[in-house]
Length: 497
Image (cartoon, rainbow, N blue to C red; front, side, top):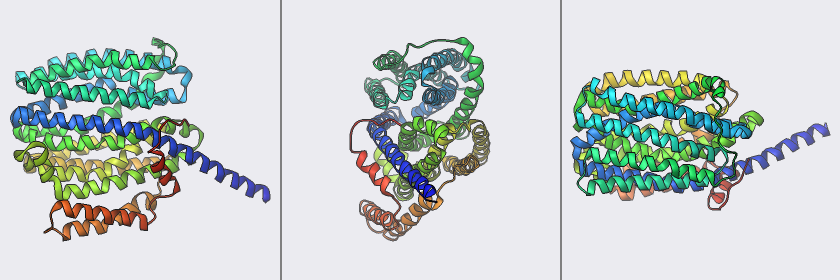
């Protein structure tokens, strides 16, 4: 009996030590990624504001369509190989050089195919010549960025996230400044797309040079590895392809039913949503390597980490949802100008979807880590079918508000199925701690924000925020490791697990 007690005590101590190391790693990785991600997203939002104001609603609508179409083709180049490279590199470090070479080979071939499709397909859809040229150029830029990103994924597998974050921030700043310069010099859509190609071309040697500064084996190319890798890559690629389709097809359908002006309005709202995605992206990028290792060594620690991170992301998402309900028009007017305020209801729906998207993002990362990418493909495919059906039914009648509502329904559907999949894999979510307590804490804030409607928004929101924080503390939403996370996030350096 004493032996059993000692064994249980040892497991508790071991779990506590591992949890501390995991939280320390997450905090330090999140620190560098958050700073770089914030810089990158602010640069992206600033560029979108400049483009929306400089191009005008109609031309900006063409830009949104071109980027959406090119992004769908660009995903054919990446095809999930980045996540595959990081996971395999974390599990089998000795094969990282061969995996990197394999991914480079795949992306080069797929990039050429995507550009060929970008040149031929737009005319079949009846796009204007200027839009068609922009699609081809943005697709070429996406193919080049994918090649450069291969070296960054290898750096991530080596746990050099500081280098990854730095390069990504630098490239985002360069791209935003270049696009703004093109507008300032009187350029239009074609000039902006040419600038995107130039910046993407620079990213390839830029990223390669950064990888070479880190200790690693020379990149090797073994064509024979394709046979074993392709089935796994196909699963990763299915998830990425369907997810990207969900992200961008609504813009294409809005354009098909409502034209350039409505597409420009919807694009302005959607870019706010895309900018906020950097928050779960930071967590996902910071954790995917450690989660991949824990999936094969310590499932209990993985389940605990999964629940805590979903708690963090739920806590962050809920106030954004509340802000969307009361502040969407003010935000759009401030960012883009008065005409874009008409997209306020669409933005409110899009921000409401964050309560599903943020937790779903880390759940996706966990699914990759445990090797459940194949059933994950089926979930995302079903979500895409729901999204397309919803958009086809809603856009003709309700316009961009219908598209945003379809996005909300799709995200909710996907996260429910995804959490059910993880439960089947043995990863049970602590619903009370991760979701229940944040929901209870936000309820009084919602009441206050709406009850004080006569008070200026700049006053109501801070009051609601204070009430929310107090509620989180009173409900003991956070444990000791969460506070360790906050303290460690202010430190420096990296920890390995």
